[in-house]
Image (cartoon, rainbow, N blue to C red):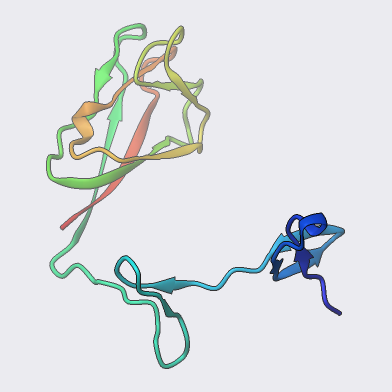
Length: 141
């Protein structure tokens, strides 16, 4: 069955490829790559190019709050390509990223967020319960 859609049908518009998914039209799109003005369609004999970073390492660490109401910077790990921060599973309460209970981003036990930072010390945590904290996971090139 053809699910294509005509754009601006009253003015003789172009036909675009579409598919009907549960009663909703979804535009069909082909993936391609190349410099400005050039498009190479991704196909079996022309796969999407990727670059593997040799020498990359994975690191992990933990941080906990000792004094509720006083944000603690995460341990410094400069030169990272980003960090994933997960609230410890045994936390008693919510952990706050980047501020205090009034201003921080809330993470319940087990919740995680990934941030594009080049040093984990750029992020601070706070918690209502001493000993609650987070674990970190990052990659360096």
